[in-house]
Length: 135
Image 1 (cartoon, rainbow, N blue to C red):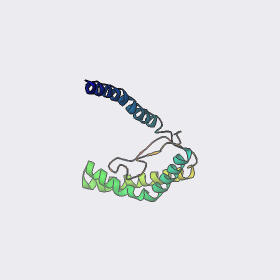
Image 2: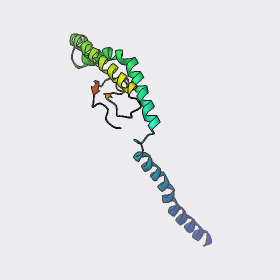
Image 3: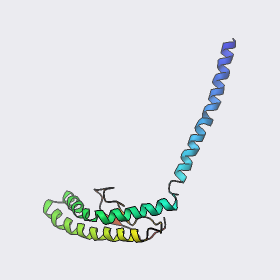
Image 4: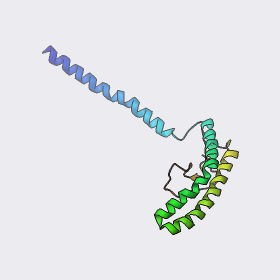
């Protein structure tokens, strides 16, 4: 009889202890989700400067990216002609955004260009947002 009582006491103790063990983990996940966008000033500005340098260096990749994407959306001849001109325009746009991000790296703002780095989403068309929005 003592073994049964001891096992019941142990089982009840473990069932009351389990929710408190998981509560800390859940609180940490909630805290991490709430503070995901609250990065330090140094992290925001260094990321912005790095994106500026990468956008300046990889801006010529807009030409083949747009040729491939336009060809996949239509046909080869239209992709080679329209994709080339679209790529040249986006190359100048990404160069300008890279220069702006690099010169205003001390101001932590949201990204102007999507995708922020050209290889983040190769299949997506390059899009531009509002300039110097607060992060």
